[in-house]
Length: 375
Image 1 (cartoon, rainbow, N blue to C red):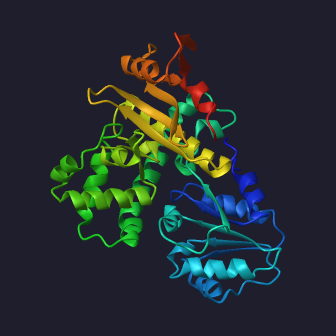
Image 2: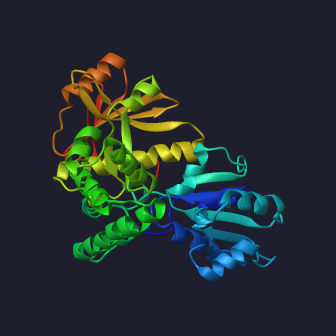
Image 3: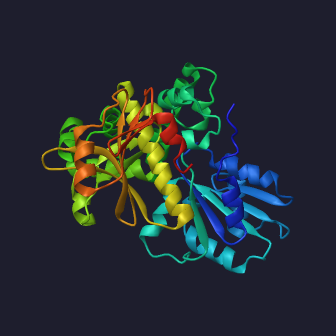
């Protein structure tokens, strides 16, 4: 049984002593559970969800008791003018009051525009469970993560059928509620089809033009759909690395799912997605807890030499990673980038008898490599 006290719990608790904490991430990833765990440790705490009509009235009037020590505000981003509201609450609060704001990835969107919350909060991104977060992880843990994904409910489900039932309802809820709540979509069928096609195109550079033809809509519409799916933490993009960031963004990204269980493909694709979401969690942790700019990319030349992943810190690649389900010999492309750019290289293999050095390339088992990542 996995201990559901997430490893970020003490980190959030520590940051609450100094500033507000924004806890963002996919829906049903465990944000509310973490918040309620903190409330249980607090003598005078209150949980208010903006979706609840009674709670909304209390929030609007800031009518929580003056003795409150921990205030949890959930789904607050749905409140008009929520940033200015929070600024006022934080700037006038008593010293004992700690404020935790939880919600979907849309909490993070305020960073792209000017806002008055600068210097008043710490950001924490809660992602699905990973091997690094599960202390007693074994080979079977990887199998479960590949099949069910890292969202707590399906991961801990008694049977695969229960996990599948959760996912069907989860996807239906995302499309019919969250996406429509995020932006009014004229053609619900088109975005459903886009999502379904992406489930089969994990790990390959995605052509907007090709996807638009398959869905029978304009490229700009597909771009809007992808932006929505990414903002709601359903998918994430991995762009090709280039020192010129603007050029990098113009090239075709690869897309992966936060929920590995959504991938429709063979075991190799599901394993690659698991590595991708684990590395995303790793770079998020570097940013959130070390204060360094960290990003996840892939490498590709015009001659189509390609390496699955490159972790970059402060815009400098630190490690390149190739994910393979059974092959233990480093790929020619991994050797090429490793030799030409003198980058530390790792080939991560799902089924590997013995970890070893192949020249100067490290060949690691999936269990060993994933356990060593940040959270």
